[in-house]
Image (cartoon, rainbow, N blue to C red):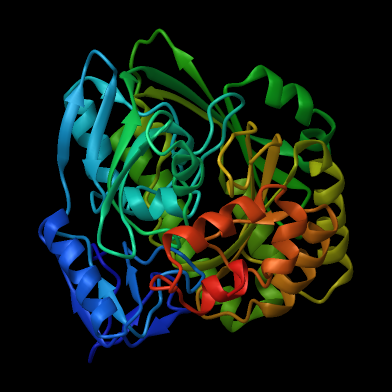
Length: 439
């Protein structure tokens, strides 16, 4: 996959293929100074602007008809501070490069999501997260960031410097300015033991609180049209390292999860009636396995089967009820869902518009294979998720607007007031931000 999603004749496309845009022009600044100049020039020309990462968002959060700022020249590690245990990276650095560079230095992030193609700024600005009992999203591991604001000035933020901007800009949706560098807290590299095993749906829900409490990182996938799930627990381990063998790894991750899965999705798209049978076979094809490796090799996996996704954070205590309603809805509908539903958790954090802001959260993600009509399923699922005061992931499909968000985010007004101050002329505005933040 290319490092930046793009298309022909000046058309920009996202990874999921569901969003396109035609920017007036594109720039790829090689320094913060060049970026500041590009921001000032766009303002002179009366154009809005958007920085875009790898296009992994399923919403039009990065789309612009103004100036598209590509970050591929703003990459690399600026500084590793072993006394403070932090690393400062340029905003366009892909997570994959950051993870590999840290591992070479004997360091690691504490937690991460399950894909590492995104840029660090794209992933954090949309609230990308993994699963964790105590360890939160990637943005929650930020200790400092550098931001170019609407007038081209460079702002440094941390808990000590511009703390009110820091509170919001860690998940800033691209609305407050363009992030140019991020400082993350890191720790000495450690080993995680992963234990994957199938478990009946009813049992996972009945024992969810214990499974959550007993594991540092717990998640599961439920296969619609079946009573089956695949669970995954990741916990720190003293070793020894026991990575997945290349053959098993290829079979489970490439062949089963990407290869056979891709074919199953094609079959399901062409003949929806076969989906429940495919789901039953898929859920049984996964066997239990245990392996121990460094964090990014356990947390992340390749995703070659393209899909469209919607994900909501609900209060953790509402999870079982939410999933039972989702299952009942699918069972009584004529929907044929070939992609598993993914469930993860996060502790409460203190970031203004984080999906876990101020509350312990459980994430419910629904997916559809790229090219299959997803509206009916997503609409029905969204009705259930919003009834539980769900907060949608900023980078995934949803239909919510500013009025809804002001109800589910107690500090919503704090964010919009900061935006009024930092971007009064709405230089970083686009249709998506107009909908979710108001104009």
